[in-house]
Amino acid sequence: MRLALHAEWTKIRTVAGPLWLLLGTVAATVAFGAVATSVVTDPGDPTKVALVGADVGQAPVAVLAVLLIGGEYGSGTVRTTLTAVPRRAVVLTAKAVTLSGLVAVAGTAAVLGSLVAGRFNLPDPASLADGPTLRASAGTVLYLVLIALLGLGVATAVRDSATGIGIVLALLYIVPIVSQTIGDPHWQHLLQHIAPMTAGLAVQSTTDPPMNPWAGLAVTAGWAAAALLTGGLLLHARDA
Image 1 (tube, one colour):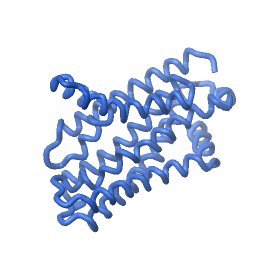
Image 2 (spheres, rainbow, N blue to C red; image 1 turned 45 degrees about the vertical axis):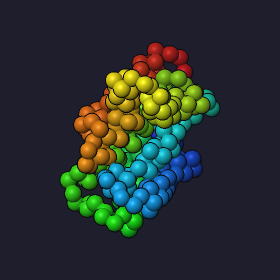
Image 3 (cartoon, rainbow, N blue to C red; image 1 turned 30 degrees about the horizontal axis):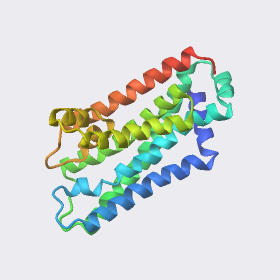
Image 4 (tube, rainbow, N blue to C red; image 1 turned 135 degrees about the vertical axis):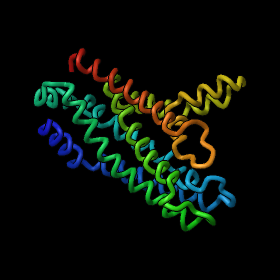
């Protein structure tokens, strides 16, 4: 496992794409959060408004996760990877651990930057020491990590970067839009509570969360686990 982790870290740090995508996550999250806090005059939930940029910042995370293995399938270098590390579960685990660590660092920087911007822009900013704010902050970082794992699992299953990116972004952005078009409140409520984005980002609410914050993250974690399990099984069963 140690050698597999070192190999994944080497592959990521020796190309420019992952770094730019991680910087894009930080920049998009902070920028959109700063804009939101500067235009809202009466925020009912200052912490949630400050962290709203994660809605956009998750997109580069998803793209990075998909490219981490989809790019290898596209270039054919996955054969070299699996030759060097024949145990495919180890390969996928090493990718997941490396990706999670990088996204956690970028997510932490993005969340802290968003909260600092909120303190400058909001008339009554939340304190970083508040329990609900700490939960929303840590939960947002964890949410971004789960989205990365979701993207990694989907890409492992479909073995194509464009298809993987399309599937993940559709799950994140199109499903919530579709839920708004449903006339039946029961089905609308249900769809919002099982969608990975709307459920997971409930953790950002500190005043009146639409659902239990940790239960919402558990839904996103379920999506990520299902994607990784499916991808892992297919990786084991199929030829490279």
